[in-house]
Image: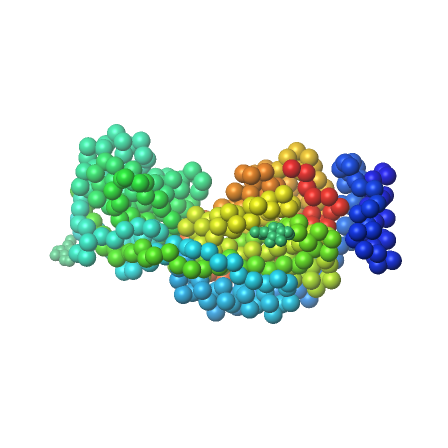
Length: 474
Ligand SMILES: *[C@@H]1O[C@H](CO)[C@@H](O)[C@H](O)[C@H]1NC(C)=O
Ligand SMILES: *[C@@H]1O[C@H](CO)[C@@H](O)[C@H](O)[C@H]1NC(C)=O
Ligand SMILES: *[C@@H]1O[C@H](CO)[C@@H](O)[C@H](O)[C@H]1NC(C)=O
Ligand SMILES: *[C@@H]1O[C@H](CO)[C@@H](O)[C@H](O)[C@H]1NC(C)=O
Ligand SMILES: [Zn+2]
């Protein structure tokens, strides 16, 4: 169409004759969007680029690079919970590494983040048997008194059962032995278990870890107290111990536990979101954002949650830089701080940058593991979805053409709620919650070849969307 033609001519003139942008803007402007078939053709023309990215990431000299970088990072820094010295070290490490990699506009954006410290903790069953339990206090929990809390246990399997048996809860330690349905459904026990138990007079809670599989491993995570409800100490216990207490209770056995926790909430700490870019050649102010979070829990190494997501968001830019690809719009990798405490760094980023929301083309997050990729989860308008479905066709060679519903990511959801198209990586994640928030989340659960595929997918999607003539329709 004529409008497109005039834009092309504009680019050509400005390059070939080195005319000024002013000259350019005096030419007739586009008044509408490209037709869908034009866009589909345009996207299909990226087949060679997609092939080059796959060659480099999966079969070429960048093979296993994201894994090796992740291994070096986790071996050097270890875990990095919000407010910790390790998180500071992790941010410094990444800032240096991104700069050394030759990426552009590498910088840190200050944020304030929670500072909860676990301290010493233990739980001992005293009746009917002496049994030391593996526990992990939950993020934001208060401490017990120094001598601990020794109390009889009330075991329930649901909030409904707790309500029915409210009269029995007073002065007890409530143990939640809820079955695992899905993370999204069952995590409410970790988040609100303490508050619900406190409302009926419990003195502490022990919550069955949110996982479908266990080798006596406790899983930590953030929990939320409710304003105006007494704050009682809360920790997760293993599936094995929860089920054992469930059986004991059903038999009518009396159970007594002593819980000791010295957790502390310190004043908010200074931290940073870590940013690196490939600056757009034509619309530098317009952005495709790729992200993962740099913080983790204070157990394991946070390799899977979310070292992998952070590393492929770096690797995607490395791959494009290695291939000399500079898209029309800016590619911006952001490694968030304090995701685990509720997307704290990302919320502050949104508040600061939402003034430019019309320039955010697509926001992407990988935070469900970097195992074998299956496809992309996407949230956006029907028109945007149609465009993304064409982009995904470029991934046929690595069998990840599926475009699914509902992008997710704590760190990008406010952008999506405000109408910006969002995408999240969907991987074969059946084991993700086996390791999630435990000592088992180490580099050993990652696979180099799987990360290569994730990196290729991430790079192709980000690059093509950032290079299309038009931003994704809202
Ligand atoms: C990448 O990792 C795979 C699987 O561990 C291995 O077979 C392959 O040799 C590695 N490639 C390079 C270049 O290190
Ligand atoms: C449990 O340990 C306490 C001391 O810590 C001891 O007095 C008690 O006899 C033990 N109970 C059993 C059943 O071993
Ligand atoms: C908003 O975008 C403009 C133009 O690119 C830029 O100069 C400014 O720094 C941006 N503001 C924020 C808060 O990102
Ligand atoms: C994609 O699927 C084809 C056919 O099943 C298979 O031969 C190929 O190895 C797969 N490629 C990848 C990267 O998994
Ligand atoms: Zn995460």
